[in-house]
Amino acid sequence: MSFFISDAVAAAAPAAQSPGIEGMLFPLGILVFFYFLFLRPQSKRTKEKKEMIAAMTKGSEVVTSGGILGKVVDLDENFVKLEVCDNIFIQVQRHSIESMMPKGTYKAITRKVAKV
Image (cartoon, rainbow, N blue to C red):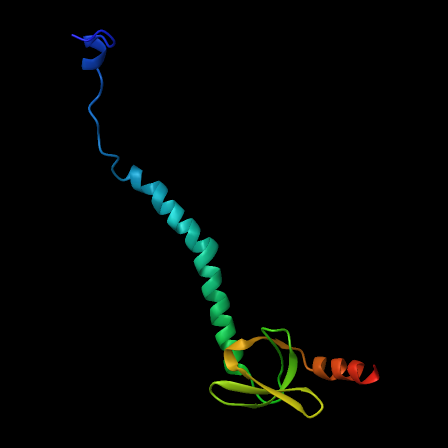
């Protein structure tokens, strides 16, 4: 006999049941949400960058991850030789190229630098 809970209330409590498929819907929903929020956009960006690096040719105008604008003079499997000013060349790793610029960007910028 209990002083705090009457015996009738304790006996009428339902038996504990396992959550079943309904218990799995919320965790699965969270996983799907994170996939579409984080994983899918990142894999799309990675794929686009691989395609951009594969399409890079001599004469392409690019920007490195450090923000250096240059014109591709020579390239091989691992490195790219960029002309950053008249007869000034640097070599960077191929994967450090962040974006390709429209034709004429390099020429316009070097013209501004020459005037100053």
